Length: 300
Image 1 (cartoon, rainbow, N blue to C red):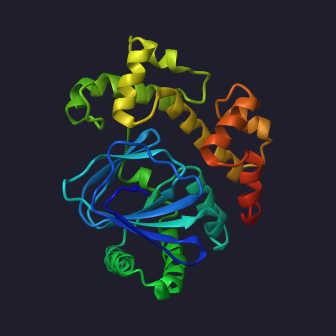
Image 2 (cartoon, rainbow, N blue to C red):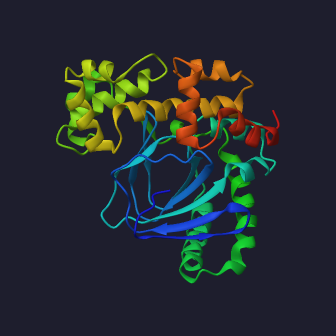
């Protein structure tokens, strides 16, 4: 959720939260591992970075994704607003959704609404949510829970058509960067260099890369490379690498029965100790606690 001074938030039953913001945070990556996020843009298009992909959301489109995916708005209109509905992962697991849909969500797929009728319904609902946020009317909270259940089941009609097959583009290959740099997704003075660093990280974070490897790739001093990356993303190179690795590890924890040591190694960490430390810092609990809190509710 893109929280800022212009965001109004209200909490409903079962940990659901609705929010409305008329000012999008462009400056930082966001990651919310305990939430499934449903978002609606009444004005578009809006471009996001989700992991290693550029995703375009058009006007009046609702989309749903796991908040653990590192994501960031990179292009939007000046007057853009956004409605969010956040669903706790624990509640999401209890809604008796098909395991194939749950697995795709936790594997990083992004789904959007394709039905014009449902877009109209979503528009009405989210406008209504804005009124609820403004009035802080708690009596409507239970109806929101019922609507969320209905809405998630409606998304099942798109089960075989995740967003990446319709409106997602991969990061441009290096030989196309000169041609596409004018519309590059990172709007900073050194956007081409930052774009190359971002692409290198998202393609290689499962390998044993460190900050120096990223800097070497763009032929820069590691301190200067880190400064450029931080100016664009709000994160250091090392923190972004860890963010991507933690996201991958959470996906393994929720969708496989791999041992913790195997999850750590397969997610790019060099030692179990480093994995536990990074996971605790970013998620707020141990990998075992995270898995036990969510995994039992998923029918495999």
